[in-house]
Amino acid sequence: AKVAVLISGTGTNMAALLYAAKSKACPYEIVLVASNNPDAPGLRLAAAEGIATWSLPHKGMKRGAFDALVDARLREAGAEYVALAGYMRILSESFVAAWQGRMLNIHPSLLPLYKGLDTHQKAIDAGDKFAGCSVHIVTPTLDDGPVLAQTRVAILPDDTAESLAARVLIAEHQLYPPTLAAFVMRERDPVHLLERVRDLAL
Ligand code: GRF
Image 1 (cartoon, rainbow, N blue to C red):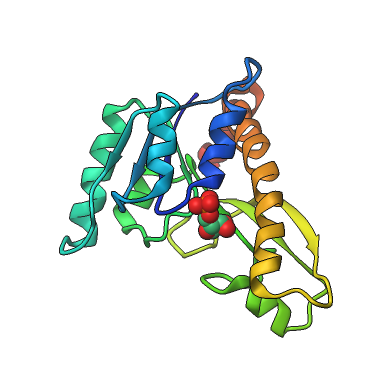
Image 2 (image 1 turned 90 degrees about the horizontal axis):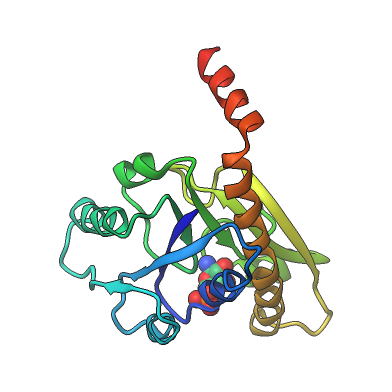
C-alpha cells in the first residue's frame, strides 16, 4: 500500500513509519512526505532516505486552496493512504471527505481525553495516573474518529509536560507503524471488503 505522510516539524513519527517500512514484511511503503513548513527537519531526513518530499508554506493561502494543492500532490505520488504525523494544521472538510477512511492520525493522549494541544499538561493537571497516545481514523472533527489503537504511559510524580511528552513519544513511535500496517492489511482483506459492501448495502 502506498502511503503519504504529512508533517509540520521534527518528523520523528514519520521516521518511525519510514524505518518500519524498510522491513520486507511491511505491507506499506512511504511514497511522499509532504509539509506545510518548508523548514520542517523531517523533510531533510526523508529526502536523505530517498523519499520524495514536497512542501509549501501555507501562509497567505485559503485553507481549501492549500489543501487542494496537497491533495493533487498526494494523488500524483500515487498515495492510497495518508498518515498525519505531527501535521499541525486543521484540514478542510473537502480534504477530509476525499480521504475519509484512508487517513490516520496519531495524537498524544488517551482519546477521547484531551483533544487539541497541551495534552500532557492537561493530563498532569487533572492528576491522571496515565497518559498515552492514540492512533485514530480522521473524521471532520479534530482528533475525533474511531480509535484503532492506544498505548498507556504511566505518569511519574515528578513528571513535567516535557518529560512526559518525551516518554509518550517513544510509545508513539512503537504504536504507529504496526497500527498503520494492520490498517492497510485489513483494508485489503477480502472478508473485510465484503463486510464493507454489506455495511454500505444496509
Ligand atoms: C507528536 O507528539 C504527535 O503525536 C503530535 O505532535 C508530535 C509530533 O512529533 N501531534 P514528531 O514531528 O512526529 O516528532
